[in-house]
Image (cartoon, rainbow, N blue to C red; front, side, top):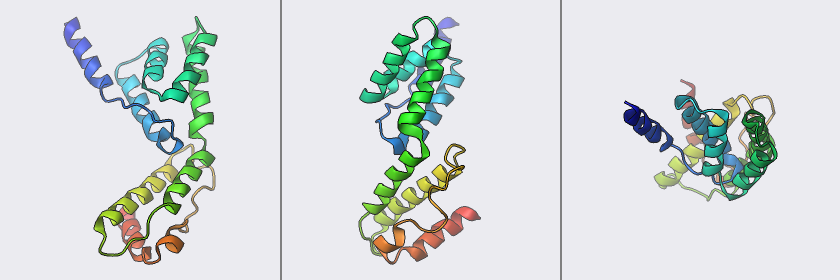
Length: 169
C-alpha cells in the first residue's frame, strides 16, 4: 500500500514545471505549485525543499538563503519564502510591465495571419486572467481600454471585440 501512495505522490509532483524567474509567469507557476502541494499534503519543510527544486536559478538561490537563515523553523522559512517571491516576481507592477512589454513587442498582423491572431488572443486572455487575480485586482493595472493593441496593430480592434465578446458571454 505504501508503494502505491509513493507512486501517486510522484505522479502528482511530476505536474510541476521549473519556474523561469519571469514575473509574467509567476502567478501561473505559483497556482500550479500551491495546488500540487495541497494535493500531496506537503509539510512546510517538504514544500520549501520542493520550492527550491522547482524555482529558477535566481529565485532558488534566494529561497535557499531564506531556508538556511531560518534553519529549524520551516514554517517561518516558508512564509518568508512566499513573501520574497511575491516581492521579487509577483507584485502587480512587475507583472503589468512584463505584459505591456509583450504587447508592445507584438508584431503587426493582418487578417490573413490566423496564427498571430491566436497568439494575440492568448496574450489578451492572459491579461484578463491577471486582472481577475485577487493580487492584481486591487491595482489599476490594465485599465479596460486597450493598452498598446490598437496603436501597434491598427486593425485588431474588431478581433479584440470578438475575443472579448466571446469571453463575456
